[in-house]
Length: 57
Image 1: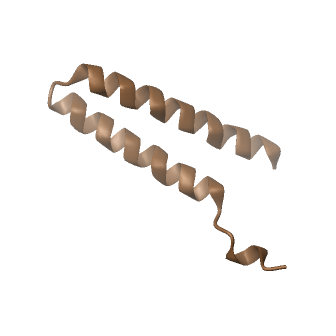
Image 2: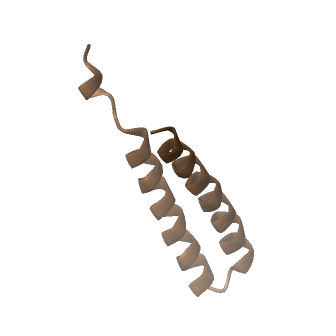
Image 3: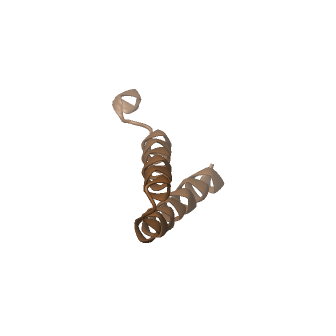
C-alpha cells in the first residue's frame, strides 16, 4: 500500500558502485594497487547486481 515509501534498491546499488570506484581511483593514485584491485572486484560485483535488477524489469 505504501510502496512509494520504499527506497529504490537500484539507486542504492548505483551509489555504492560509484563510491567503490572513487575509492579505487584514490587507491590507484596513491600507488596502493592491491587495494585498488580489491575495490574494483567489489565494484564489479555490485555492477553485476545492478545488471541483474535491470534484467528483471
